[in-house]
Image (cartoon, rainbow, N blue to C red; front, top):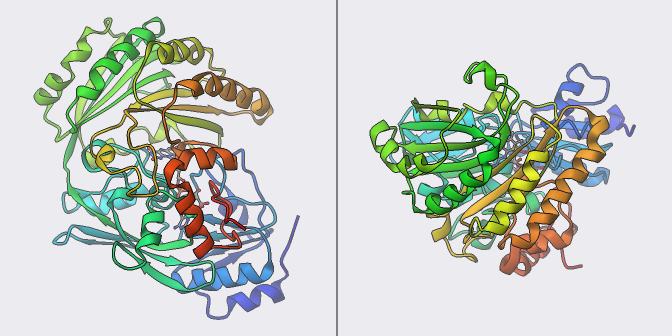
Amino acid sequence: MTTIDTDTTELLAAGFSGTLLRPGDATYDEARQVYNAMFDRHPALIVQCRNTEDVVAAMKFARAAGLEVAVRAGGHSIAGFSACEGGIVIDLSLMKHVDVDPDRRIARVQPGVLLGELDAATQEHGLATPLGFISVTGVGGLTLNGGIGWLTRKHGLSCDNLVAAEVVLANGSVVRANDTENSELMWGLRGGGGNFGIVTSFEYRLHEISDVYFEMRFYDAAALGDVLRLFGACGPALAEDCVGGAVAMTVPHSEMFPEQLHGQFVAALLLGHLGGDEAEAKQAFAPFDAAPAPLFAMGMTVPYVVAQSMQDEDMPSGRQNYWKAGNLRGLTEDVIDVLTTRAPTVLSPHAQVMVLLLGGAMGRVGETDTAYCGRDAVFNVSIDNIWEDPAENEEQIAWSRAFYDTLAPHLSSGVYLNWASEESTDRVKYAYGPNYERLVALKDQYDPTNFFRRNQNIKPST
Ligand SMILES: Cc1cc2nc3c(=O)[nH]c(=O)nc-3n(C[C@H](O)[C@H](O)[C@H](O)COP(=O)(O)OP(=O)(O)OC[C@H]3O[C@@H](n4cnc5c(N)ncnc54)[C@H](O)[C@@H]3O)c2cc1C
């Protein structure tokens, strides 16, 4: 195990207000853990920062030490980017401040804030910015690679709602980026991931949002094809107030569901309606009544913060994760054939295959207006393979890859990099499509030595 001696870290400790953790320190083991247990890594040093000055000091120290650096915000990277073996973790998780300006409808957010924490602060004013579906995910990684959730169809991706950022660059300088100041950097932060610097402040546009009507329908697994066909036909016509997903999954052992369904592999429809009006939602979702009779259905109106955390307990940290995701312009018979053939062969009860409805506001942003690519996607399909025993890793990863390879010929442009395990340079290039060369130029300008490389990496040209 690589270690850094105490004398060396004293250089960093001068004027540093955070916490330094080395192997053997009481909270080191807790602090090095990330969501995906596949990345059980032992960094030589974890630098827990409290403010921008700490991040600058950490960056300068890491550069001088010459060790690999991982940046950690919420720790939910599926690809394990926020963990590293023998290197330095710049940990932003103590940076938790949220400042909401309800008049300007802007929230200024430090990078260690989790989605549920931001929602709680903005919902005090009846406001929210688009974030993901699981409340314990971090805003940092989520925003920089896109950010898809309940509000995406109505108000765009998280990165579309990022209006400004404070960034610590690879050379240790601190800059502000928005549409007029360092505007090219701002363009890159909207989807280009952690490639250009460490964001120490995110400023989001906020929107009015109160309740959400949420409905879940479970069908016999044999109906998966019919459910997907109906979802493919009726989903894109839904109003932008509506959220929809068709899922192949195993019913969790949860009190929410009838005991006789626990552990059963099913087809499911997850539907949401912003505003929470049950009658309006039922009318909007009526086309889905044409599906075979569900085994179980439930619907309820809940406050937005509740909707945002309803799936938390189904996705606890500490399991092995290998995810692959791609975009679709439509649910063709070929795609349905792949999904109905492959999804029921899952090897783990925690795995799920989710076809999520996109479009709406995120699709109205031009393909080259932000770094994020794949704006014309109507659906995203995500193969979220999750299991418990590390001894199964090889077999489970092979299953995921074989599934994805069968699906790949039918996918449209872009790859949602937040729902992907680490991708090769070619795949990253493919994911960014027409924006890739511009991103390389930005990388050349802001991080020519590829200091920030534990990410879906955009390599500098030299
Ligand atoms: C259970 C679960 C549910 C999810 N649900 C959704 C969802 O509904 N919608 C969705 O869009 N995505 C979702 N994701 C994917 C999620 O958005 C990504 O995994 C995201 O990277 C997590 O962000 P984080 O800050 O927690 O990650 P971390 O692991 O802390 O960071 C990942 C990487 O992002 C970069 N990064 C993070 N913060 C900064 C920063 N401040 N400055 C510079 N670089 C930074 C770094 O490269 C870092 O290594 C989910 C993931 C999980 C595990």
